[in-house]
Image (cartoon, rainbow, N blue to C red; front, side, top):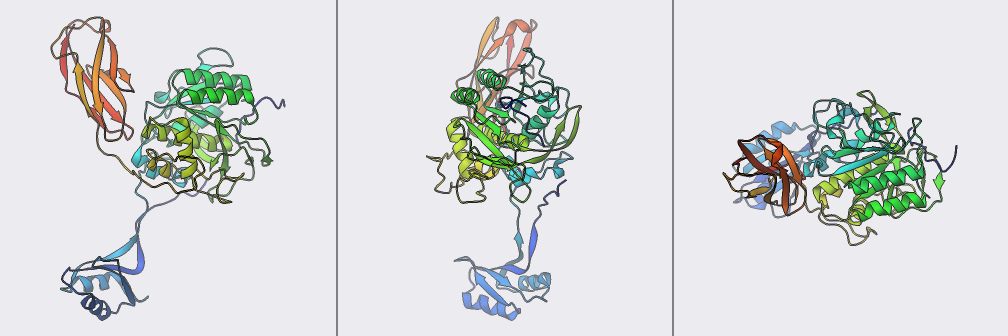
Length: 487
């Protein structure tokens, strides 16, 4: 096979369970503020504790019980003492997280592995962020994808038919951004991001450097913030040049490292995040390509969307790559003002370092960690050396944006193209403002000043209600007052 033709990188796992678990033989006993330390110790010893330790200056003691003790009975005994305010079991807690209701989520071990359930507390993605899937096309009829797709392009046939002619692209798209928490199928990394399907291959799944470069150029010009190429493109100056252009437009390009099972000596592109593949134990898969080209690693086996509105398992760096692309989309949704360099720096410095300390040729900077990345979305490191640990500065956002309709005024007559102006603010960031006419969205704006052009010639004569809707990265929604206009 011609080495200049990138080949698709396609190659039942136990789900992780999370629950609060009591720590055997350990109680937390809180004493009243008037109780002296010696009195507390007397009460603890009197109930047969094996040992105890006070938590700093707090009147709370960690009490260790004998192996044969009944923790519930001892806790009740503590509660019966006048000196004690409370007694409870010490609990082992999972990270606070979001669990989607998609029936196949339990088969998607890769999502808990990258701490996606915790990341979703910060952001589930935004429909202001588009992920370009440069692949074999995407199934437009798939129930977990169809409502998320924007217009794409077919660079093989030079037309707008971006249907999947092979099956690979549909698997990749679902990995990054399947419709989620809809009681159907699987969960994507970025729930709310949109999918831009770009077919770059023939029907057997083979693409060319030129088609990939053209796809990147096309997607960059149409506002995609993330591009995924599940092809081994390392060494191509043409694709690297196109990735540089994509980056200049504000986006991040992610690519597969390859499935050769060897260590490559090719140098990485500074404009492409190249991803190797890890297993459920955070070891590198034997078939994953490694070497200097590797920027990050990510789980390489997924359960995802298949052509024909179906689902199944798939392995390869073809799928570690869109896992990372999905995290990039979450990151941009959380902070749309990040530059590509800042986003990549956050990904590097928030990854879980595996293998040799720091950057290494197997795992790169480490295995992607979505929760850590999003917690630092507003704190990009000053360099990508990751010499210091990033502090966690934000874990959740429940505050809805505030939005005000500035013009037109209530009760006015409108005609032709009307500029509808909004003021919108948020405690973090407004990702999108929508104009609703008679409760239907007719236009959007993603940057301030939030001005939306409304073609009033498309509505009937008479009275109409208009309103503004502001969204943030977490999906919180703010609504403006509703006004009445006439045409």
